[in-house]
Amino acid sequence: MRDAIMAVLRRLDRDLDGVVWVITGSVGLALQGMSLEPRDVDLQTNEAGAYEIQRRLAAYTTRPVAFVARERTRSHWGAFVIDGIEVEVMGDIQQRAPDGEWDPAPDLPRLARWVEVDGLRVRVLPLAYEADAYRRMGRTEKAALIQAYADANATTDH
Image (cartoon, rainbow, N blue to C red):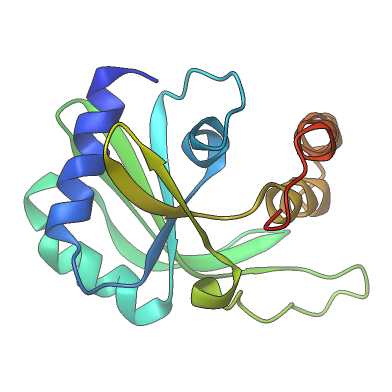
């Protein structure tokens, strides 16, 4: 993974102490061993966490945190640029179920697992959870790649 991404993760680890947050998206997948070169950092948190992250990262804001609803997802979403790396924050993200209802926001402390890379210990969402999320967003090819990697590298916490 690029040194710039690792530097941003170290800054987030330091600056967001005490806030519930987990790494998702391509960085979360790469931290779990998938061969990817992430370009940005995606974080999930709860609603309160999204606005606390906005407060703590105010100097880096490119889009203030606000409630955003799309066809298949909704969350308290904001964007930041730290040392040239985009960081997106999604608070209490929900996905639309096939019946049209919104699923509850994920219980991040319960779902997350710890990974350690280059002396940095951070929380990520398990590969099986990520695969399901991509599938539900209609990104079935990426979901299949994640699921295949998870199946080939299964451990008790996937």
